Image (tube, rainbow, N blue to C red; front, side, top):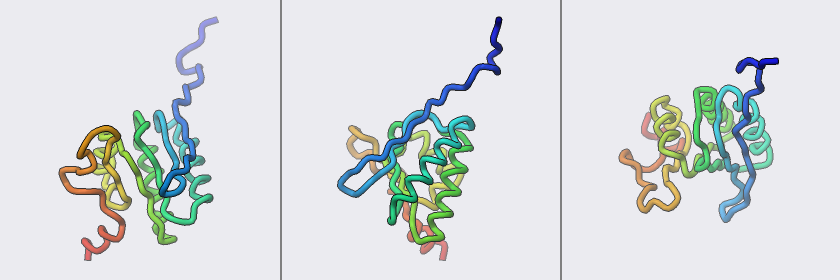
Length: 141
């Protein structure tokens, strides 16, 4: 029997792990966030948020792809956290993700750390460092 490509299960190339560090716990994301993995990403992110009382720190250095479904989850999460005075912090954002968040405007409402491990001076983006929500609000006034 021949199995058509659309009948095969789609691979789930996404993983999330909570790691403790000197600044507290952070959620380390790996793989792809797309339409098929977005529900799992959203679940992992919301479970992690429930375990933290402060800003929510996410390490994105191991992500290889993010589509509009992933961006929508990040945007909605940013709005949800802002209502409680918290912020989404994305650490070690890969260049493709930084560009995607800039183009969509999502980078204006979260803290985006553009540093890359092992690349000296990479924490400085041509437009400056990532902005906090408070800095964005002050600039808008």
